[in-house]
Image (cartoon, rainbow, N blue to C red; front, side, top):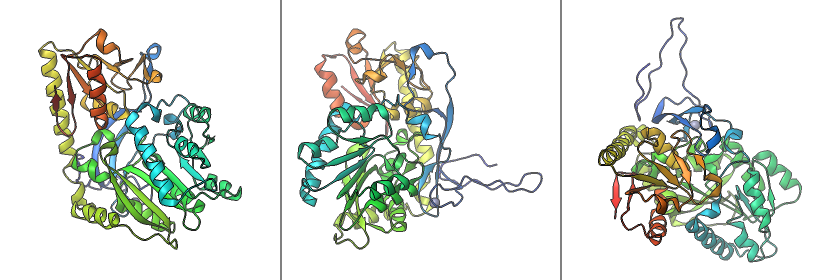
Amino acid sequence: MEDLVGGKKEVLVKSGVGRVTSFPKCRNCGAEMPLTLVDLGLSAVANSYVPIDRADAPEPRYPLHVRVCEACWLVQVDEDVPPEKIFTKDYAYFSSFSSSWLAHARAYAEMMTNRLGLGSDSLVIEIASNDGYLLKNFVAAGIPVLGIEPSGSVAAAAEKIGVPTLVEFFGADLAKRLFDEGRRPDLICSANVLAHVPDIDDFVAGVAALLTGDAVYTVEFPHLLRLIEEVQFDTIYHEHYSYLSLLAVEGIFTKHGLRVFDVEELPTHGGSLRVFACRNEASHAEGQGVAKVRTDEATAHLNSAEGYQGFSERCEAVRDGLRNFLDRARADGKLVAAYGAAAKGNTLLNYCGIGPDLVSYCVDRNPAKQDTLLPGSSIPVFDVPKLTELPPDFVLILPWNLKSEIIAQLKQMGLSNTRFVTAVPSIKVTA
Ligand SMILES: [Zn+2]
């Protein structure tokens, strides 16, 4: 078989007995996918922080190979890690640990309340409602809500602040049950979950089953166009089954009788889309954002193989840039720490082959991640004050999307001789 190179198609080979090797099939439409966006090799599951006492236990690694379906243009990882391996009760992501994300959620709640005229007779459902970071804003305004969240630990945190939450995975079955119970949401929202569901078709079928009349579904996801243009390969991890363009999302929505009537471009997560959808027959007029993003994607050739070519080589250049920087820092006797035990950081560290010899330790505000080792790279994680106990020369900021917030925070700690580094889309050092 031909060596895999990003954007290039593999060649079908015949085995000795004349059987043709087949390519992985698209999770959405079933077509074979010879086109590779990038193959990041074997990687540990990004949110599986390793307790210190299990440091020597073998860590499972899974292939992280992203393919492009040329029939429906859904970009996807081709090896499924079972969801129960990822979204366990220990799953450590609490939305409320990011203050800029909280502000984003509050602004969204206000905007939608005004736009749809939501009140005490309305119902807002959030799918993957996490610790209630968004729905609490509707609750405060007297608007009934229901959260749906598969992770027990974060759902319990939501209940504690008055956000009723079902601990379940969302799909067509659950949607039917809610519909039969008489639930008629005016707004369904989900931020950064559509990319996380293995069966995206079943998920959208569920949304469609719950939407009646002029009810609206808004969905936010990191925009594939930004990922490609800005080499954000570190946003690729097993938990993200799909990498979404408006093109692919509209295709799936159309199949379920939904249409996109507005799109907003957001700065979150390195550049996201917020897509507004409704039933085909609903009265919402189409906003200007829809045509704009459709045109941007067509200009970038996301509807042909050309749009996906050369990405792999650009990832390698980022890897070489970071490795060179860290090798030089070590040779100069400099201490490098990392900030933010984020999933994207784990992809970056794993793909670049970086361990505690190059990055001595990592800090994170989330107590659930402290006193663990980062999956794959085995870099120890501590609470943030470690930075003043053992001041580094450089802090590598792993969640680069929160860079300004993090630098401002760290400067308040008086780290006067520390400089800040981000690796994507290329090495950048800030004083
Ligand atoms: Zn497909």
